[in-house]
View 1: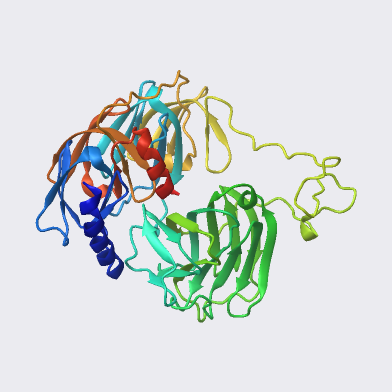
View 2: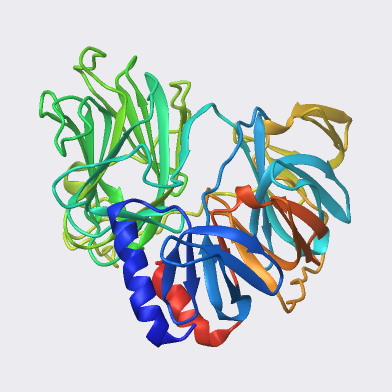
Length: 469
């Protein structure tokens, strides 16, 4: 598309998008955007329908950067979720169907059963599927933006702050819940999370719990009493990095609130004045300043209220008493004369599978049937529910990266995971793709929140990176 034509067309399209949220957008290699809906798609071109165009218009894919779609996901009743990380960086989620020395099979809701070559698999992690009350984001629908000027936008399956302000939603928080999300930021981290809010329109609701995140520090406050319930300076990852997986587990029965960062428990606090009276079911993300924050992969689920891990002991001011090894200076730099690095967490030895309770099991997978896995150990066969495992021991092999193909696209799911395949055909609501990782598969187009084209073109990488955070 020529820029002379694009200027008028895209200015009109962007104005229409500002007036009302449009869920589908096509972005071109010159970074122009056109909102509307997908009329049709082939391996060579797409046909786009937009109010600013006289009629559905074809565009060659060689000039298209990516396509944002309105993804939908059905309810999944499985008790476990397996996440397969491939050597090329893809992350695919589903339920384990079978494991052998050469293949791992995964049942998925978006492409049926996928059969992955063992040599292309870098890692497999297993998690128990809780009852999810919310997973997303998939758009701004259902979320309330506080203030006269919206401070958050939705882009690429994530919320991104553009100014100080709140975005909130009623997520039907149960009395015992887990709220997990990916956070990314540039510069100084500064944002708040409010849970059990009674007022989605306010950045400071009168009821709920307010968690403030800053570099290294996290504060917890009761919104009703204004009392500081807890404070930690042990969130080192928030100072050293610009992204983190954050999880808050809260119980209105015991008053306990647990903070996890990147899977590690940081602190456990208890509200002495916990009460259900006056609390709501809302959740807020609140940007504190103009430094941008990105929130993605939000998962709200039930929690059993059990604190099965305890954090390392903390000291007043974040420092151990004088003379104790491991001293920390006030500037946060370890005392080189006294610091003694903590040993890294012990990992299961090769050939052993990690269980959710911290134990490990040696053996090889015999079968997986109806959510039960049979493992042959040196002593006998053991049957376990798949969700009791954290990791799966695969036969050691020389890993291989799949071959890059002309026509490869990268398709993104609403949860932030992605898969690369060569686009071969498009049917009624489906896409057929091929990869050495899994062969040929038929995907539901409705499963994808975004599809990237020309993914190996180095000239387009700067545009892609600038818009991907």
